[in-house]
Amino acid sequence: MAKESATRDSAAMSEKSRSEHEINEPGKADDELIKSYLRKTDLHLLPLTFTMYFLSVIDRNNIGNAKAAGMDKHLGLHGQQFNWIISAFFFTYIFCEVPSNILLKRFGARMWLPLLAVCWSVLVACMAAAKSYGALVAVRVLMGVFEAGYVPGFIYMTSFWYTRRQQGPRIALFFSAGVFAGIWAGPLAARLQAIDGKLLGYQYIFIIEASMTVLVAALMALIVQDYPSTARFLSPAERAAALRMLEADRALSPQALYSTQQVMRALGDWTVWAYAIIFWAAATGGATQAIFGPTLIKAMGYTSTRAQVLSAVPSACGFVAQLLSMILPRVYTHFSVWIMLFSACACAFYAIIATTENVHVRFAFLCLSNFALSPNMPLVSVWMSHNVLGATKKGVAAACTVMLGGIAGLIGSHIYRDKDAPLFRFGHIFVCVCNAIIFIVALALNLYFRFENRRRDRCDDDLDAATLTPEQIDDLCDSRPDHRYSL
Image 1 (cartoon, helix red, strand yellow):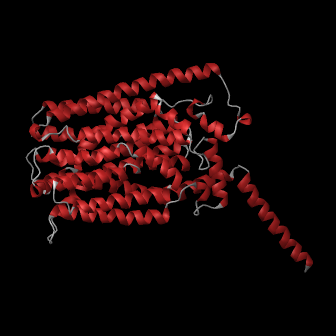
Image 2 (cartoon, helix red, strand yellow):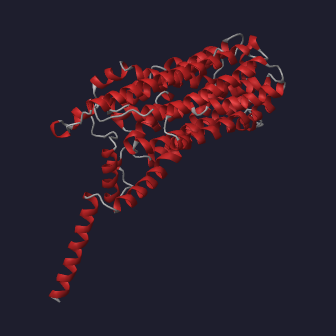
Image 3 (cartoon, rainbow, N blue to C red):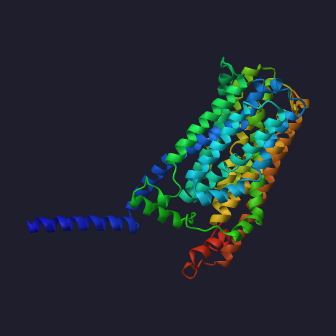
């Protein structure tokens, strides 16, 4: 009896020893643990964040579908009033992204991101009750406050969960949700405006789409977790293996404190603003396609409902291109080269649209231009995330990058003017120039990073981690002597 008890105790101690060894010591088991970690993390984070971005783009741009459904005529909008309603959103969107990321670090993604979504969706529903131009402007201004934090918040959140290499395809997938929304926004709006009820067609668009966002926000609050170190869906062994992997890749630590010094370094780093300029120029084309797509197609001679449906075709082309942006950097790792290639193609395609009057050619190149426009936003976001280090600096850099995307929406709201119909040459030329700017800035970053990497190789300095605290290492940001920029 005593022998059996001793055998059981020995087996229990052996099992405990193996478990502790698995948690504390990296080994062959780590590969399987990391695969399990990524599978569980992707399942808990990506479907809901993808769906929420899909809905946020629909909520932001359904004002264009509402116009095609007759909202402007019902409310008596005239002149540039509709354009100002669109741009009102971006006045607050521009300035609220950096504060939102700081608050996300304070409260955690699980609480902060769903809260933002509920707030903006309530405001979308309020647009159905708006009776005047002023009311629509006021609601759109408030929407910008809350939608501002979602995209930079997601980019920042992934820095705590994934290595830089793992972030790339996931950020690209996330951004593809925005283009995917363009595929469905038109057909969905066409179906909702056809509802035979007591409300007008455009009011159903606002109310039903806002309700969908609230439902997904509730699911996010229940399922999404803040950090790997506190995630309940991970086993102790998976958590330990993941934290070793993330530490080795210099991923962000949830224990890292807010640093005013890093905020100032981010704001004073010209490369952060270069990423932001690329994002701005890419977003100008993307935003105008999303909002004015039905208007541009309707100007080609199609009916309102037909234009809503056909607007899905250019968006489908953009969706395919964004899926490709998940794969291309793995084939050739120089982000700048892909960005320059796509921007050069978009520049050429828009030049063709601006110089032809043939309806079929314009529609075909509208589709091709959306294909060329769509990859650059995820590509520059991933490029920035690869190159910027420091917990606070990366959060501010992500917010600054997307912040200029808000300026793109503000400017883009006014480049497709009713007086330029039906060819809208001014808008097409403007987007063409934006893509030329992308090419030039990406080339400048490529050359600078080559120079800086060679300089650091010549210096051949090592990071003496033994003499520095984790906070001091984090404060070095991307000036770490062992850091090399991705091209």
